[in-house]
Structures are given as structure tokens and as C-alpha cells.
Length: 243
Image 1 (cartoon, helix red, strand yellow):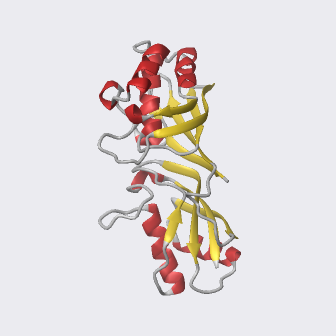
Image 2 (image 1 turned 45 degrees about the horizontal axis):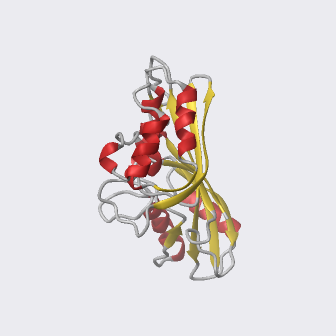
């Protein structure tokens, strides 16, 4: 019996999604809870990894149950066992060929910036505080550069290994909400640290230190050393996985 889970989590205290022997992770916590329920190991397969400190509002995972179990009851049992930072939003039966990663059509991420002089004690885990006044128009000029199919080698984590660094971005735009700048991006998939490195570059555009033409040159040059440092992880959210 294959079950599709939709969940949200606050990633501040976790070493990302993927199970790691020496670290506390989201996948590890769910598998521990499942072992308690079924009294045997049950593996969880996620739609994608999120890094240390990154949050999710719509992560998707799949589990093959060792015995019949009502999805609604599984949802209740997992939420009773999981820590407060992890919540199962939905549990439904899935077709046998469902793969949360390979079946996904696209992923949607958002990045939040608190753009004011003073930081916030309430948002220090959930938004990157940038005190410099940022120019939204310049940041959106840069955001448009990323739309389409491009080789994002210059915007991935140094040393990461992927068979291909080409990704197709279908949406890339900033908006302002009071003191916040919120970036929304949708793509077929992402490289490690890709969104955070893109955000770091666009913030430099907002500070008038870079412009859209320079961003395009960095993208086309495919040299990670030319791109700015990645934005911190706590402003990043996996919003939705679309199928």
C-alpha cells in the first residue's frame, strides 16, 4: 500500500530533509515514528532534499506500508509522535507507480527578506534581515534573467555533483509586502544551493553593486567563483511540489 504524504516543517533545528547517521533530520524523524507504529523499519522517499535550516510548507513524500493502514489514521498517529516542528498535512493512497521525485512536474520555492533597518526578534529564524534599502525593480530585472532553460553551474554549491546542471525556470519574481521582499521561483528541479545563490546575487543587484547584465554574464560563464555567496538558509521555503 503506497501512501503519499504532504507535510510542513520548521527546519531551524534540523540538518535538512535527508537522513544522516549523526544528525537530526526530517526524514529520520518520520522514519523513527513509522518504526514505532509498525514495529519495523519503513523507508520514506521525499520529493527532494532541503538543506540545513530550510523550511517547507508543502514537502511531499511517499511510503510503502508493510500492512494495511487507513491514511487518516496514519496521519493522526504520525502527528502524535512527531515533534512540533513537523506536521503531516495530508495522507492519501497513491498509485503504485507514484514517485514523489520523478513524478514531480515542478517545484515552487519562496525566499523571504526582512528589508528594514532593525531586525525582528520574531522573524530571526524565518527571514533574512537586510538593513540596506533594496531596489525592487533592479532585483526583478535580474530575476527575469533566470527564466527559461539555462545551465546553472555558476549558482550551485561548490563541489556538488550532478549529471546535468541545466534547469528550466518557469517563474522568477520578487514582490514587496510591507517590510518584506518575497521571491517566488518555479522550476522543474533545482541544484543544491541554487535558489540561495541566486537570491544572494539579486540582493547585490538591489544594493546597486551588480546589474542584470552582470548576472547574465555570470550565468552564461558557468563559473561558481564569479557568483556571490549564497543567502542564508533560514529565509528559504519549499512551498509546493506540483504533479
